[in-house]
Amino acid sequence: MMRRLVAVALIAPLLALAGCMGDNQEAVSAETQAGLARALAGRTAGNPTSCLPPGPLLSTTKSYGKVLLYTLANGDLYANDTAGGCENRGDDIFVEVEHEGRACSGDIIHLVDRTSHIPTGSCALGQFTPYPKVRR
Image (cartoon, rainbow, N blue to C red; front, side, top):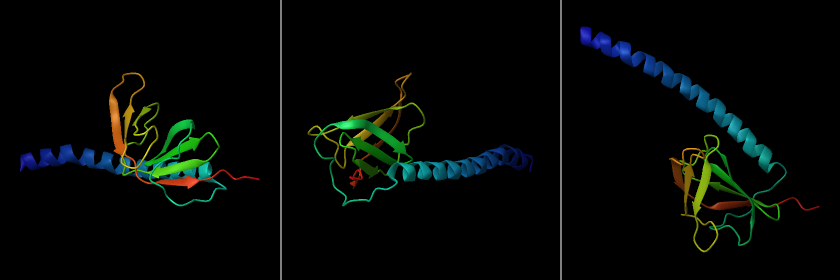
């Protein structure tokens, strides 16, 4: 009986903490979705493609939860919905393993802590959805 009470006393705070973390993750998710919506505002999604087009990137990857956003030099954006694991936790560096000089579905992205250089996550890329720059 005493062991059960001790076990419950140890587990209860962890369950409470997990519940709080779940609420916080939902808030972060809503904030992340709002940020992605702002980044894609006024743009219309094109047909998904398996690789980024050849040419220079203006900026490297930006993470919106499990969605990675690429900005091309011409202003077009490409969203990649990964299976997760590349959620940037702050100042991590994205290290991409590319084939043929451009990112394609199935390529692996690694996150590395900028200061300690310790790996913090990785994921495989999915299809790229283009969001062309609004041309006027």
